[in-house]
Amino acid sequence: MKVLFSLILFSFLGMPLYSGQAAVKEQWDQQGLSEEYHGHVEERSEAPYKQIQLLGINDFHGQLNVTRQVNGRPAGRADYLAAYLRQRASENENTILLHAGDMIGASPPVSALLRDEPTIEFLNKMGFDIGTIGNHEFDRGSDELLRLLSGSIPSATKDYSGSHFPWIAANVISQKSGKPFLPPYKIVNVSGIPIGFIGVITKETPALSAPNSVKDLIFTDEAEAINKYVRELKKQGVRAIVVLAHVPGKSKSNGEHARGQLIELAHQVDDEVDIMFGGHSHDYLNSVVDGKLLVQAYSYGTAFSDVDIEIDPQTKDIVHKHSEIVNVFQENIQPANDITRMIERYERKVESTVNRYIGTAAISITAEQNRSGESALGNLIADSQRAVMETDFAFINPGGIRADIDAGRVTWGNLYVVLPFSNQLVKMNLTGSQIRDVLNQQWQPNTTRILQISGLTYTWDDSKPRGEKINDIYLSDGILLEPNKNYSVTVNTYLADGGDNFTGFRKGTNRGTGPSDIDALVDYIQNSAQPFSSAIDGRIKRID
Image (cartoon, rainbow, N blue to C red; front, side, top):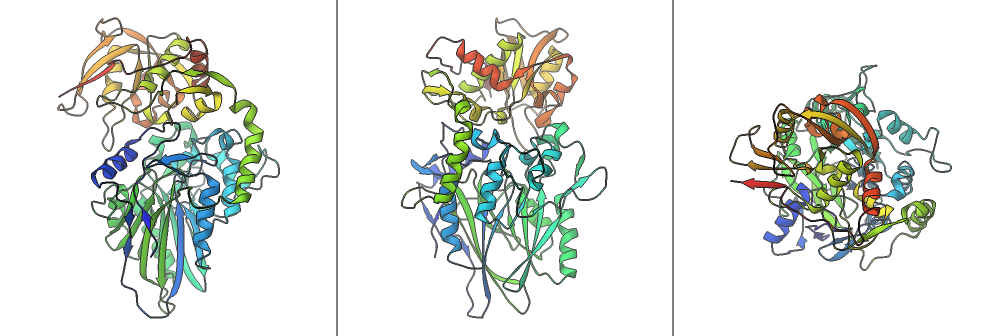
């Protein structure tokens, strides 16, 4: 039986623990660093069933040349992931490679500066068979996504030919045509057995994306879309059905305490669905819910899902299934040479930009938030944006900060990994009352997003109901914020348009556009005394 190395502790360039990753760290701590777990397996029959292997990844985010530390061990990178997947595929000629979205977006420069074409080339070289879309596939808009998948010009790389395999999405509808934006499902025949794959993306995508990037699309209920196409597949005689869902879920390493939107979705979909691959939250998930096997393999190519199934050739249905999540540790395995050469080729294309020296960090500056929600890196970035726009305050969405700054030499490439979205900055006016409303929007029905701030301080009380948690708000000089006074505010374009459900920023008046967030950070560091630093200084204080 294959071995599962279960829990992952992320640390590349001091990669911050996002909400899902923080839960993983806590889970690891609670379980005493246990590394072996054998997944979910049903009793095997001796019948002549067809044995098929499904190898899946999720939330790769173009991490072609990124190595992270997982429990103190190097993990990830596309060439090592390729070696693992090929090794597993060699064990079963009936192998399907698949993904559950967010293959691109928030990518490092080697992919992002070339419009993420290198990541699609990697998936093509690996021979992926099927995939769905995540919210980050829309970072550059729906037209650019279609260009990337089709390979139409203009291209950022020579001889780019688009995706060589289908991408499916059953619950994304074009407003103009009323038809699915992408094919809703695909039937893949393996050794004479039809397997139906249905793709869905979280219906919350409009709130997670810049509004202009998905304005021409409708995101429908995931369960309704899945059930619609399950009925269609059943009419065609398909009984083995797999859902690729960019919808989050997580569980303990033994499969217990499965929770999240994917778990809720599993209870709502037709029982003909056998397996659901999840994504979006970067969590571990390996559990059986309502008779359906649910898996999610963390993120960034540091792990993958291995699902082995047996199908009865008479009924065409899945009769046995076994799953495990496998860590991509770099020890004791050689990277795939062809993928290494591909990475090096693209690194040469961007090296002059990536390696440009910006400054020297005196200490590691992390995006890890304290109990109140404040981080040293959030303070640095917010200060840089307030300075360049010359406003009273600045606010940053925490999800826009994707890495830490390590101590020592800092290059443009390091900072791009921190701020990979290249958002423009927007100056606007808000009243003190509107700023209070925005801060109260940090507590949302399914999550909490503490904005990183500059120019003000405040306290919040978690014992108060949502919408009323903010107490006193002060300017940096200790003067109370006045409800009816206008203040100048800097945010990025994502927040300015109400991204992450911060709709209060849409009320901003007298708007003006400034430089990109990364240009502001570069300028701020270059004009700081070297070595530069930043620290948590009590801008946000929790009381309860």
